Image 1 (spheres, rainbow, N blue to C red):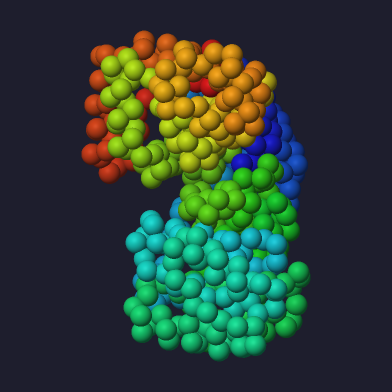
Image 2: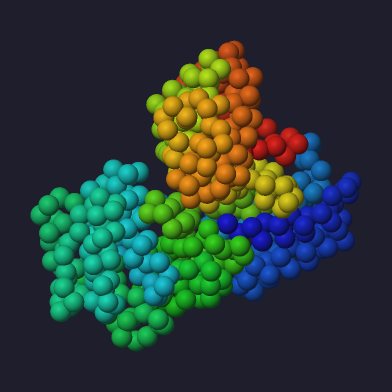
Length: 470
C-alpha cells in the first residue's frame, strides 16, 4: 500500500542525514524533495501547498530534541503534519440513534461500492456485534440486487428482497419498516452507481436520503484514481450531506494521492480502507498509523490487532507446546502458512513492521509471496498423514506422486522439504527454556486488553542479516 510514495519520501529525507543541525538551506532542499514525491504520488496541488507551507513554517523554528538528529526531528514534524492533513484522528461510524441506524452508501460504478457494503456488514457484525440488514436500491445495473444478496449470504447477514420494477424510495421505506419490526441494529442501503455524475442520479439519491434519513452517508471512491477521487467526492459532498468516505483498492495503490487528498478537499473524514479483495479486507482508517507507514515507520499496533483477531490461539498454543518439546512437522508448517495467509500474506505483514522500507527491493523479493505460499500448502496437502509427520519418508517416487497431486514439480517439492528442514532445525534450537518464555509472553498478551501493553510483551522478528523464515 502506497509503496512508491513511501520510497520517495524516504529518499527525500536523505538530504538531512549526516547533518549536525537544521538550516534554512537544508530544510528547503528537503521540502523540494518532498514536493516532488507528493506530485509524483498524484496528490492534489492545493493539498501539497497547504501541507508544505505548514511543514516549512514549523521546521524553520524547530528545535532538535535530545536524542534526536536533524533528520529524525524533521521526519517527526512531517509525520505530525501528515497526520493532521489526512484526518488527525480515527472517526468511527456514528450509530447512536433509535434502531435501526440507517447507513447509506453511494459512489460511482466500478469503485467497489456493493462489495464495500458487504465488507462493512461483516465488520459491523463481527467487530461491533450488530444485527445487520442489507438492502439494494440499484434497480438499473443488471443483477446488482442478486449480487448483494449473494454477498449477504457470504458474510452471513440478512438481506431484504427487492425487484427492479419497484422504485428505490419504496424499497428503502419497506426495508426500514421491516428492520424496525425485526429489531435490527443497522440497515445498510446500497444505492445505484453511475459511470459519471449526472442530474438524474443526484436527484434520485437526494430523494433516497430524505426518505431513509440515514445517520451516516458514506461515499465510496477508488484510490487508484488519485486526486480525481477527491474531486469526485467533493462534488457529491456539495449535493449530499456526506459523513465520511470509504477508500477502496488501497492494496493496489502504490501512489497514495487519494488518501492524502480526500480529507482536505472534501472536509469529510476517511472512515474505512478497502485493503484487498477478500470479504474481510476492510479496515478502520487511522490517520496516525497511515502516516507512520508512509514514512517507513511501520504500523505495529494494527499488526497486533490483526494477530489478535485472526490467529487461532488454541492452535497456536498447541503448536508452541510441540515446539517446546523440540517437535515440528509438516502439519505445523502448513498451519503457519495458513495463518500467515489469513492475515494477508507475508508481504502485508512485513509492510507493518518498522524499518522494512529501508530493506533493498532485492531482499524483499526473496520473501515468499501469496502464490508460493498456496503452492506450498498444496504440496503438503498432497502428502499422506504419515509423510507429513515423518518427512524423511519422502523419497524419489513419493516426491513424483506429491508433485503430480499438487500440480507442481519434483524440484518444488525438494525446495519445500529443504525449507522445512531449516525451519525444523531452528525450532529444535528454540526448544526448552526459550520456548517456555515465549509461551508465557503469549499468555500475558492474551490477558491484556491494552494494545500497547501487548506490544511491550511481544518481541518483533529479528531482521538482522535480512534473514526470513521462508
